[in-house]
Image (cartoon, rainbow, N blue to C red; front, side, top):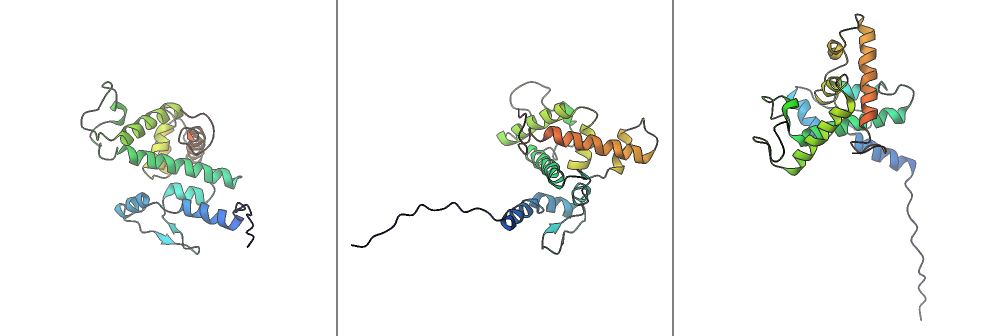
Length: 197
């Protein structure tokens, strides 16, 4: 009779190198961002680690640690919140609705909205964007949409801070409002634990 030992399988722990590779894979350029870069006339480049990088201002802010200068992990978390907001905006399919002001969406009542795709995912994403706009507030929402979704730089948002005359102060206020907004949206978008819906 042959004895077979029934050893319990050990759970494989990921080494720090495997975790870093998984994070870098998650932070790689998404197909949507690659398509948006092609439309804007940009080409992705591969760095020394063979990761695709696009010269997007929000990605540049992450690479230069401007989202959280003293904490690399918080910098990456804020970037992931922004990337989740981009994907939610793409799921909402709002790019095809240029003729309709986004603030008028859903204000006509309940039920299917005329002229919009009937996809449940798109409707859910639109509701989540409305909740995000309410949570962030009217002072920061135009900055978040301009930088994160539309791909503009901080300098392009100086007009949202008309009360400050000096450009460097306006840039500092824009960056601060962006950071606070990304921290506020982390729980809603499912990137961080916190207040969800």
